Length: 93
View 1 (tube, rainbow, N blue to C red):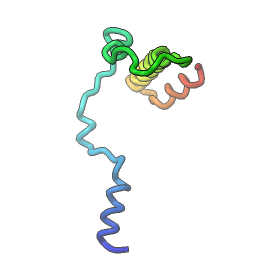
View 2: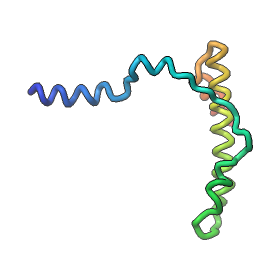
View 3: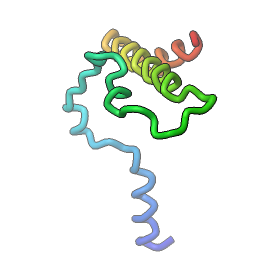
View 4: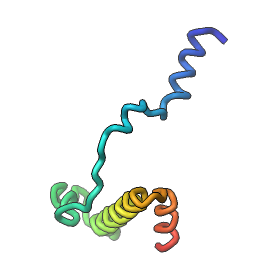
């Protein structure tokens, strides 16, 4: 294998690796100040009204993702792991 090919492959093997300096970035996960505000900002659906309740589906999805993210954050702060929280959340729905 040529050096150029090996260098190219190393870009893919390191793709998901994060620089250690990212550990110093503080991330605050908190509930939205106003529930489902993002859907209000998006406005009405550009799709024709049909048999599928798109906005209701998105609202349910956003609420569930928020619950899982907040539970994962709380679990991480308590010394657990987010993957355990996500697994238990998935099992309860």
